[in-house]
Image: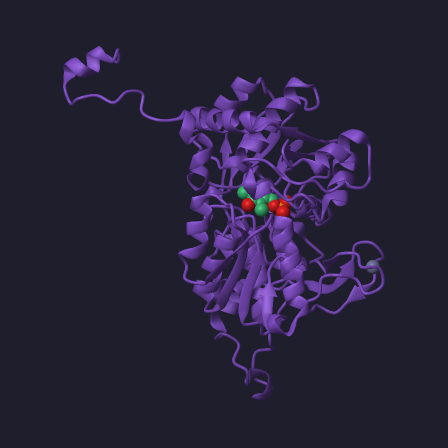
Length: 445
Ligand SMILES: *Cc1c(COP(=O)(O)O)cnc(C)c1O
Ligand SMILES: [Zn+2]
């Protein structure tokens, strides 16, 4: 069982550098990575000390955070979590962050609404229960604030001074905002053809924003080169050299969904796929909850959602392949437009192991689904949310998802950032002179 760290941290001044040397009365330094024990290779299991590295030296496999998770009474841990802050930091005992993380300058993301979506359920013919996990409620209106918050703490611990990323839009805004709050320099990279809402969000926090003439995959390649160059010294690319820490932020979606359901797991989760990191880490979080005894062990199915114009994982799933063949993206769901998804093979494993699937929908279906969610539940999703809701609809129509089971669908971003997707087909019912006669004439009385 982890110590009652939250109580201790409020009485401890932010760790002074001299505290460890000022005699036996001093508080011991909190472990900077909390319960995290090491980085471990997802392919060969080789372990590395917690440092800003992301690939295995033995096999080039991706590294992930390995833990010594709290053991002991799950009831005590549940109580500790429930009395924690209303942000992702209530799960600090399960994340690679110091126990006093909530006292540090950051955006305190998470603890977003889990909306019981009865109207949408009725419309889709779901009788087993449907919830929308609505991450538009995060500080920069997408799920990316979760992953950036964890990477930020790692950057602080490693003494990095510039926060950076390659982004399909939302990440750039989340990094810019987090850096502004925490006093880091930021320099973020995006493809040149993003939505205006994403570009403004990425720039407004005052950091440097660089638009690259190329696709996201070109941006990502450029960033890898920058890291290897002396220019990149002191830089924390949240989704490249800090990727193992970044990824862990997505586990908080699993924790929140389970806690908000009353500490239990749904039958099905529908999750969007860009690089696939979010989907794989939600699965990791769900498995941890079972292992810790925080929820009853029961099967769950994970479904991945892509847009047809960038559906390399869905294509591989349908073809029965283990590898993902890169594609050149062409879709309005730009936040998901990664043609060469790093975690694609792991997504395939998870969908197959849990009995789920990976599906894709056309841009037209994405727009329809955005409007469907808005009209039934009052939630305005960005294109990524249109992808997940559209895929949920398709999964039911094609008999791949059982409508008598309980399902959670993720909305990971805000429609205000992708207005262009719906603007051409959404607008005033009528434009009239300010008279009752005109209102009547327009057929609205
Ligand atoms: C980044 C992003 C995702 C998923 O990204 P992964 O790379 O798969 O973790 C989903 N939705 C939105 C809105 C995003 O910005
Ligand atoms: Zn390895």
